[in-house]
Image (cartoon, rainbow, N blue to C red; front, side):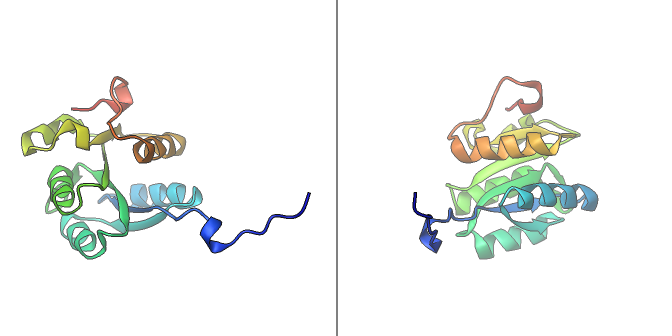
Length: 148
């Protein structure tokens, strides 16, 4: 069997994730897990920085991975703003303090959101990110994946 030569067009396009979490060590851990799986990661530690980054780079960002509690505002508002600029962007909310149901009060449809409860293992993060990229609807029914 002849050797297969790969060209740039055969390589899958790297998916870019905007990772937003104010906990530096948690953000670093998630970044390492995501980059190890081949994702390109842009990170921010607060609402203002993430908002500015998304507005500048919204065409290349495929997913927002957002902690619900952020300095300067909250992850639900960031999701709402981002979805208004790019309705096709995927959103995965994470939190150890509150469930994604809080976003219902910000007028974000449950069909636009996915949720992963902290703490989680790297393998769980990767599984949920993969699911979000492949799915058009949020994952419901599990304790760690409870949605609005």
